[in-house]
Length: 532
Image (tube, rainbow, N blue to C red; front, side, top):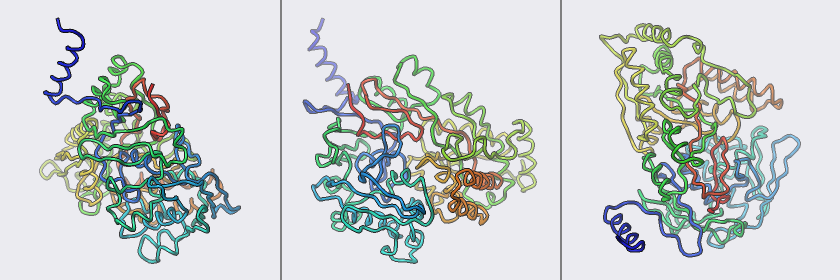
């Protein structure tokens, strides 16, 4: 029999020989969190980021005027307080004294510079449309006005003044988003877009970037210049891309990861038994849906085709039999839990039809549009290659084949898939929209004709745009909600998208992790976490 120490050494040696992953060594006396983060970020530039997994890292490096509390509510961030004019159009933010991770002061000019940079057409920010709430934002983004005309000013080094196009009581929610973050002007002007590389990246949040090995991990360490560094427990966080959620699950079980921000949905019941207290689920502020490429695929410009395809996605089977973690069938796009919205709101008109009747009607619609068994509709679903999404798309493929559609699935890494969506290099795309802030506009804004790349289906309806514009000017919250509900009914009647289900957040969180708080937006800042 081997002695315990010798056995441990031999086991470690064997594991190393086999290439088995191990928990990263943590320096003595330090607290290190190992964080499974789904996919490899494409960028850590707040003005260019698009994916949730990018925002997870950026939100730990950078801080906006407001920031997330543990339960994702907006709280003072770089601004310690703010004032609002009686008409709701002028917001004045008073910054706390703070420094970038290289010791330079964080100034109001860094915020104004960051906003202008996000809106600059050369930046090509996919989220620029969010900044249209600032006066002149759209004109700047469309190249019709210089950045200096933007309603963002720095009257002094510790004051940021934003003048809005219309009242936006949800602005503190919106300012948590990375597209409103400051950028270090002194670094960006020196390195240009290359400022985001390790060794150059300068941050104003609780952590600073120290390494990025593609395909392996992103490493951040506590920022000693952060204004609240004394209350940040973690000394280091490693973020790992974990597209294989079953492997990630095993790594959490072995203690190699402290958390992973996804697990395979249909394993929920098993995980509750094998890892009690570790799987966390809660209703999310998110919708899983499909987009049609109406710009390049002629068939999808026919509402009969879009309706036939949407009608025949078996949402009940997908949520109750396939995914099984509490997801709800979606016959609307805005989740019912969204703040400031109507309850039991709009739905697609055919929601009450039995599924078999919908299949019959779909075949009729396709035949009217010219697609029959002799001449079937042919299409490809482009999808990220994570396990749950592949299962979901295989179910959709089977549903559409049942009505005579010739369907194939093209799998891609998440970043590759979303690049295809942005470039309209797809027929049908599979995506989920996680609300950037808790208001119906974060969902409905996707379908405005001036939204840009994230309006993946290129929906255009002047009546829809007019309703959203009217909602922007409506001071009465109840009337505003009704206007937005009318707008949502329009996109549902136009079959602008295929909502499939309302998402459930699914996280694996080791019982050693403290400071984690389940919340609908699913924002979890490492600033609040520690390890037992």
